[in-house]
Length: 588
Image 1 (spheres, rainbow, N blue to C red):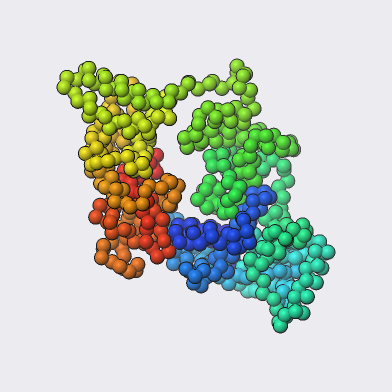
Image 2 (cartoon, rainbow, N blue to C red):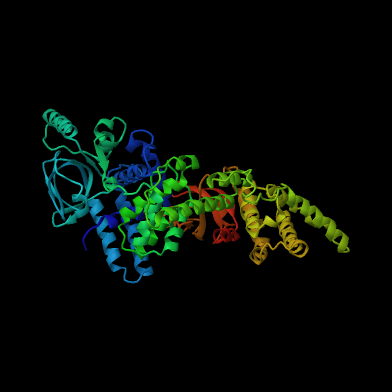
């Protein structure tokens, strides 16, 4: 089937996920940013500019980047993993053969793609354009009826072309069109001077060189006359939220579903420094939903959602300066409602991440345009009393000691660790089973808080007592799920304590390393990377082969989680170990 820009984008996103799931490649990718951009990654411009810069860097990394650790094309190293992704798509979806064929074709086109500076010689209405390579003198047919509408001839096309068969090419959406006869003439004069000074007449221009010439520092003079392909079709409205709603409703989303889809952008504020959007973020999830449920062009959808995301993520004072959108039948009311609900959902998401409630309430009042002194404003939350959990534990000790003859109050002493963990909680009724999972399966391990196996077992007994008392005395239900997990923790908690005690390096920042789940454990005597059967699963569900430390092998079990960094040799430097019950946090 014909190659499309949508298939190219989906292909690049799948390859991005493979790069990010491989520790060695992910590190190589991060280190290559400065090489490609010849300095820091770009942060200026709008969200679309940052997105397109990331796309150009990704294309270069996959096709042109040279690495001692990964000889040859990076894309070739990902071929088998990419094929496995296509097989998963085929297995999971009915009638996926056309999609899989398109994605396979996009991968092969990527391998054969090339960059250059092309002059638009002829525009064919409803079809595309003819391009002349000003560095190599070849001519290429460019497919794209929509693109042809924005071309007049004489412009420069700068970027990557993907061969689509029968002599036709598809443009990378991250390419640019440079307009202005003076810019074109100046560039052509420069190229002629380079040819005169060189031995050959054909110049090979890499994507990195194009980035420096047209997009990076020093390229502002040329860039002043240019614009990206993705920016050729500007939104007609100045209200990006209304544009996104209109787009989704026109594709068949009902009004409520369209509003709900756009509101999801509020749950994850856009990171302006991030080069790759559309992978492992809220935008990726929305684009996947659009790809499967609609016939929308993904480039158009990505552009609309990125612009809406920028508005939703912007501070209130920035949003308030934006020009009002022109009147339309439905969009203004929808957009106002989205902005209001987005502020509320952003508040809820931040509260879920544990951010300070009082500061978040002030932000919410600001985002909703409410005066905090206004009596009609939202009800002020009940005051917090940090340390309330410790007070409740003391109350429990007194009550059980007084009501249960022979009860050993000292058996509750291990709960002092939980009191330390829960110190920020100011309202006892806000304590949840998730908090206990976080404490028992992560906090204790990161702090190396347990000093003996006996203390670990005693803590499990005390926590069971605490959960039962909280329900009976205060109707605070910490959930049967955690109560069930305590049975397994009686053995896994002492074992993970021993594992962490065996780790020579001290516990580092919890942001260091990646979280993996043990899938298989290999032979301890295996010395070669290829013969090791140690396999771990990433949070994204991908598996990878590693070499686990011999010092931990005897105590590790399938289902355990580890926080580790994986070297290029495959050796896993384990920083912390967690019991298998920690998986419950991912499901809550």
